[in-house]
Image (cartoon, rainbow, N blue to C red; front, top):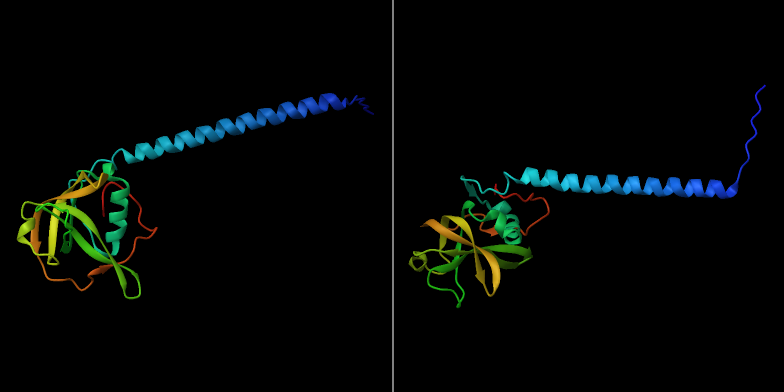
Length: 184
């Protein structure tokens, strides 16, 4: 028969439990910090190729127009140099220069209500097109300022008049669009 005699000291048990909890907290904090830093580093590694604009021209469709508009405005620097192509109508404000216009679309916000949305564009041929005429453009995203705010400006490389498309209005942006520096 084996008999063990253990003397229990409440003060030693408390100190031991406190030390174990402190060590566990430190280990958990170190692991959390490591995972946080390693996940942000791995995201940065994944974005290395993603921050380089594609040499291909990204075609913006009506379905993703406002999602792309939203994400480009939110992350201008990621998209500078990206070549894009899309259609819309010419919309000018009184403060624009003769080579500027917004390539606009109407975004449906509720029944019988819409909002004009679009990219500010720059072209030496801008004055050749009348207000509200529909055009298809190709160009490159650049960074500029308007009313003291940084905004994307499309430097147009080609522009042609088109007829108004069937799906002229665009839906509001949603959360399904995954932002990348290459627009597709």
